[in-house]
Image 1 (cartoon, rainbow, N blue to C red):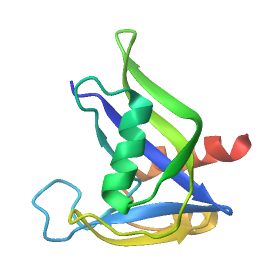
Image 2: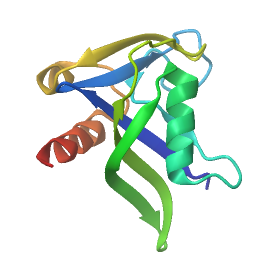
Image 3: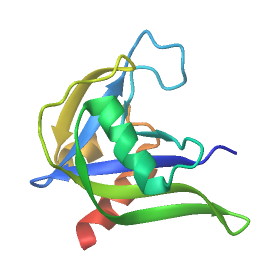
Image 4: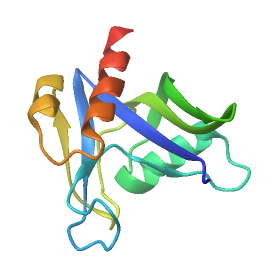
Length: 129
């Protein structure tokens, strides 16, 4: 199983989601998601998170904390980080067609979020601390 990261990016009480390109052949095309992806060989989870955010959004981020790690057989397979952007000049990768900053309330009412209940749980956890 490939190891993965996701990054919940928060700025002034709003959360960044990026929309998958409608023309993409991959699963979840046209849906909203937070940045993330697979680790490269020799890369730490945090390094992968920073790289994936940069590749997908052009943002540099400050990783604040681990929101959740997902384990199987006592081995970490995925990590979700909370991060704050260091810059605001978003330039999307070709995999994505749009971005938007959403309040928590807007997220709850938004359709087409990939794994919506899990994502809302992660945002709720990140808001507690």
